[in-house]
Length: 209
Image (cartoon, rainbow, N blue to C red):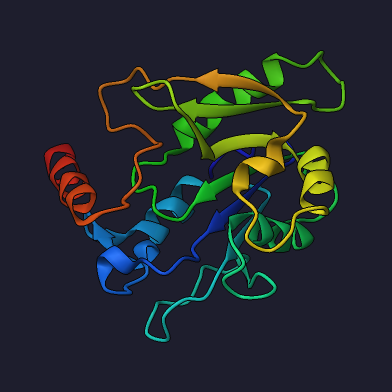
């Protein structure tokens, strides 16, 4: 049994056109013998609630029991509106929410625990969460779709976003703890945006075996 991180929920965003992959959904690309979405669902198994936002191919395997799927309104209206739709399915009592792009093949439970430690360590014990924690890449750029956030504060921001709004607007006014990945394993923030990224991910996965 995977340890639950308190009231932690996970929203996985699988929308987008994936033009660089000839329209193939990035979340359904196979890395190391499993789709990226399957790998991410395994990493988030300890969440009290898991929500996948976006359409999946008709031939995709069913989601595990308990994992919800919703669509942003209107479809294709961008990641901020997708998070808004995902938050509507997150139950009360989940005081932190991981907001994750759907193309992170090396997200792990360990990485989520690290985000949780940084976020919770910045707030006084027993206080309402006010800090988020987000991974940054090797160039020091914050990877906004690989972080853990106070649910209520993100929910408030999400209620104001317009169609097409960028994801970073969801985090306005939230104190952010920046987290680096210092392990030898592939970084959890690594996303498969291009065919070259996918090739790199598959190489890493083969080396890990």
